[in-house]
Amino acid sequence: VNTITREGKRLIGHNTDVSGFRRAFVDGLPDVDRDRVVLIGAGGAGTAVAHALASTIVSVYSVLTDPLTGLPGRHELMGVLRADLDRARRRRLPCALLLVNPLGLDAVNEQYGRRAGDGLIREVVQTMQALLRRSDVLMRYGGAIFALPLGNVGADAARLVADRVRHHVAGRAFLQESVQLRCAVGIVACEAADADALEPLDLLKRANEALGVARQKNGEEAVLWHDAAAE
Image 1 (cartoon, rainbow, N blue to C red):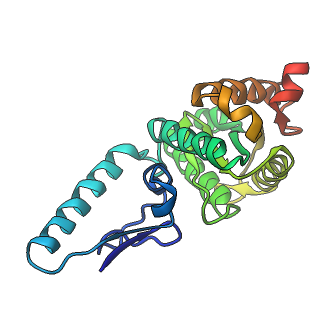
Image 2 (image 1 turned 30 degrees about the vertical axis):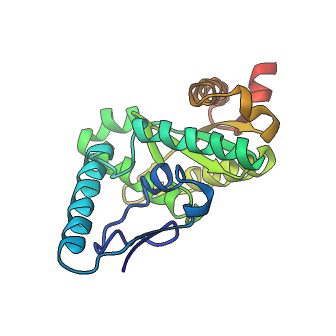
């Protein structure tokens, strides 16, 4: 029996880390199948099909991930946001999205070179990933901006996560303790009652607006979209 589980990282007989795209694939399944997908191969042709499917999914995974960080990219982010909104509509649960932008990376590229800048991005990613729930998936939205979709998380909890990420990134010295960064975080939260009227692009637009205000504040605080709109 070959199994995909949301908690595990075992993919149909392969020791492949699929944490980056399992939410987009598994969360799109009907409720009855969402927690476990089982492919049963009774030897022979069944095993061959399972391994062929594994190879296909691994190939897709390599295309969808960012080559520098190994994180899923924007295309997969849209799928995860769509799944989060669908779940919010069906189960009447909240969801949220954080856009995280470490500030000062351009200066590091100019002073130390692009290779050092790439190393710094990888260190920042490792720092952020160490703070997350096992079910959370950090994604590279573009450039030095990272996306963190949060399923079943409302505005207050999302702000706590944002502050935790911001403080840990700003409180650490990177590149052999030679560089410190500030970290701007924009937050959009979607309550269950709002999910029917929202699409993934709406969440991204609002999170970008909040991130813009957070940048203006030089990363001094995480900014919720509702607060950003008021300003």
